[in-house]
Image (cartoon, rainbow, N blue to C red; front, side, top):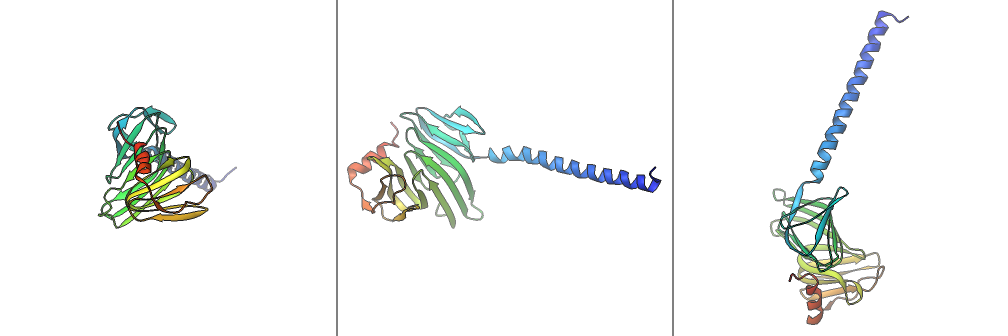
Length: 224
């Protein structure tokens, strides 16, 4: 049989292992509790809405209404003839056109450290109007579309499929960089635009868009 000393050491060892397991379990459950709470933090609200729109969060989809909150890791989408404007904490506004989808991948806005990071994925037509850029020293905003990335430097611009092109980007204020694996174009004067004819093609020459084309673009995100 085991000596008294060996028994004592065996009991101590078991107690130590049990204690470690309890700490690990506590950390695991604390993580589970904190995870959804962190993911559900509201980063913006629905400020305008027309027609049907819905939000999908954690696999559950529900209809969105005026003043509904939106969170990181949430996807919002619009139906036919739908429009949706989201206003974020820093007063940035994103308007979606019909049958569009926006996924909120990352959002950091810290006025104290003057830092802002935004990562969005958008399918469909949208307009982006930047918020408190003047107060933010370090701003890192990138929007991913199915055919190109748009890097944003304090600005107002429109992007979406237009005139049988996979993507058009039109600048109203500020500057944007439109890039994909095939090439990059920079828009830095109001009225400039670029087009991507099809997925895989480089952004085309930067041109001043005619008023009729600007009107067609704006109509895709205009509220009735």
